[in-house]
Image 1 (cartoon, rainbow, N blue to C red):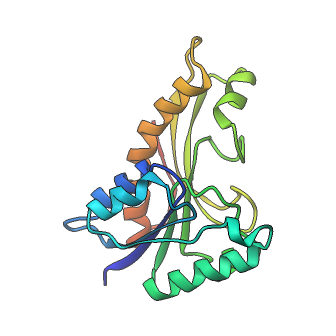
Image 2 (cartoon, one colour):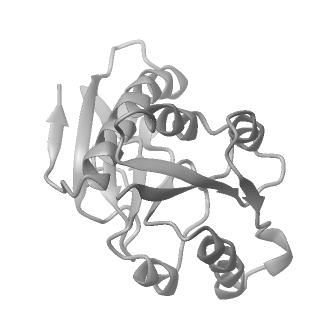
Length: 197
């Protein structure tokens, strides 16, 4: 049975596009909605251009009431009936209540070699630490920020002249390869970890 995938974004949606373009042919999943917390997210137009339904739940009117914002998110998601939720640059921290409801069905991509550098500014932190490599991780989402089981990683060398921006660009290329691969495996029921060179 084909899995239904909801993709949550906040920005340009480049990872969303890589996921959507892979969900074709013999892929075990299909996108059913792209949902953003920002009406101006560039990824919404990219989704519409690919014939995928879109929705916006703006977090700002809810102020600091995260449960109310997430109730509105859940209302949209319930209508879409996803089997899997992919966070693809969704820049809101989700509460334990939301995560628990979708436990085991939610993936995220993070631009570091978890468990290193959870949270923001990962590339700058890796450079400042003197690391020789960075990368990205796809993990299951749990109530702990960037703390769920890692399902896949790709490593990227940090060159001496790298800046946070240049490193981010190198890592993003690998994100676009890793996330579709892990989603395909996850939708097939394969939760084993894979590390790519």
